[in-house]
Length: 160
Image (cartoon, helix red, strand yellow):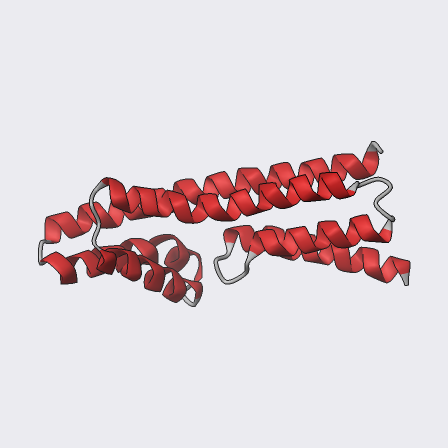
């Protein structure tokens, strides 16, 4: 039974890592679930409850950074609410269109939303690019925080 629980913990962490890059999966929550499960399996002897709580905070920060960076990118150029909604819809559509869609549909969605709100093609392009850059920066920062979270977890397991 313990082996099955360890496998489940690892699977949750792997799915969480994949979810860090794929917007369809909530990555950090899966990682946190895997960490807490692993800590519990081992009676918190190698990964203490304090360490698991700190790793949870890092994972929450990773999630927050992702959204904040995109919003700041859009806000920096004064994006409309329609642009933000467009970016979110573009992200959802991007899930179904492969890697190219995941990378560029948020830009297209933000630009379309801004154009519909203000009828200015140049401004729509600027907002689309700024929102997209914010999303990319957020994804990179989220990936760094998730790697840090997993790295600390693995170090705790190996060097108790």
